Amino acid sequence: MARHAQRTTSGRCRAHHGRSQGASVTRLPDAVFFDRDGTLMEDAHYIKSPKQVRLLPGAARAVKRINDAGIRAIVVTNQSGIDRGIFTVEDYEPVKAHFEELLRADGARIDASYYCPHHPDFTGACNCRKPATKMFEDAMRDFGLKPSNVAYVGDRWRDVAVSRQLGGRGIMISSPMTNDEDRTRARADEIETAGSITDAVDMVLGLTAANKRA
Ligand SMILES: [Zn+2]
Image 1 (tube, rainbow, N blue to C red):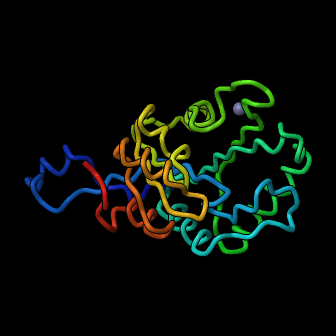
Image 2: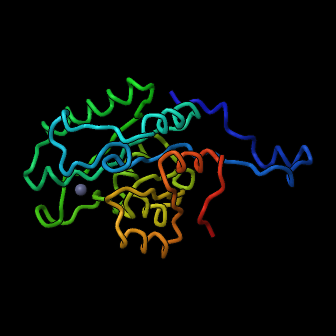
Image 3: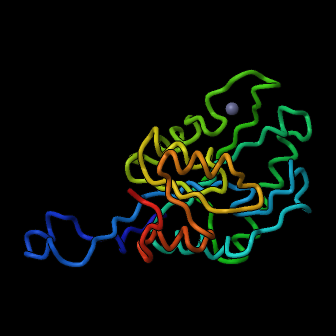
């Protein structure tokens, strides 16, 4: 269950009390869309066995802080290894289960998870593979989320670029998979960046100022 006890009061309420010019108000998002591989767990290239699952440093703590703030934590992941024939949906499921189990062992909870099995070279274009929007739109519909009040955290431009199309706040973190093209595109799109998942969650929770925001 989502808890919203820590959400700030509305601007109208603050104005009514004559403090509208006071301390900055942090509006928490209703959901954070996390990328999985390279963001929460090691990107070991087409992970097909639970034995390959390694949480990245800070990942469980980051998700737990989102849980504790009453914000939905939703995983959205491209898994083209399925259509490439590298692994199957039957392989994907136990990997997902073990990933969530490791998080749970550290007190963190994933509220929902969406994946795209496609790749344009193998199955033609689809409208779910990130940076396409369908998985996010499905999640927004499933959870009744307002696109303007969500955040996206991932290590690739394609994980967060949807913020430019649907609204909400994209924050790109750095991983070994983050390349120059990702950085260039993020800069062109004025997408915020963070040095780590911990910093990204600090930004989501309003604990540090954005380091790159118009
Ligand atoms: Zn797809």
